[in-house]
Length: 217
Image (cartoon, rainbow, N blue to C red; front, side):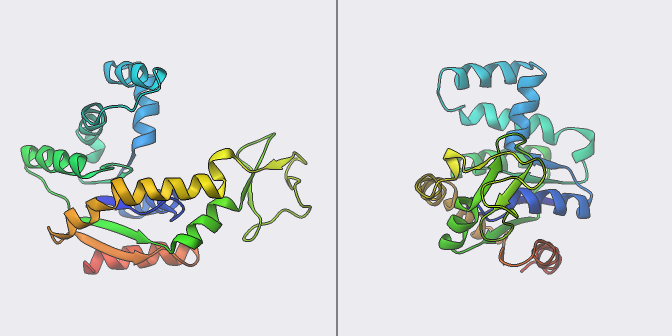
């Protein structure tokens, strides 16, 4: 299957993308991983992207699209892929359509993860990360530490990252609504959108997604 995964910050896209890709036995292609891999390997695209990032500028769509094209042409993606974080806007979605048409393939579905705005704000703003080891993450409501402000694993101080503050989260949501959400309408016109609730236990959301992709609704 060839799938695009969309949803607001805090909907659990990263978690579901990993799980769904494993279940469907297709590669999980995320924009963040593409950038990190190209920059780490010092590819021409990586060097170009880094030059924009170092200058404090956004990486142009054509660079992101070129990275995605290169990744989708790898042997492990012949049988399908799951795109996470790309396309990020309608112009990228149009470019992806053109790219796939050139290759003689098409998307099977666009999986839209829905979650109430207040819930995603609560999910993100409640996160607390250990200063000693950022892999240790807690949540003030859903997975609180045994002692407030102290990491259960190593005793390090727990803190809220700047980009997890409620104000920053609401700004990120506004960017999502303005830039990314319109691709849902774009793909809905093509009959590709499958919408599910991102609420509930992780396993339930995964099964809900798999069933929706199977039935096409």
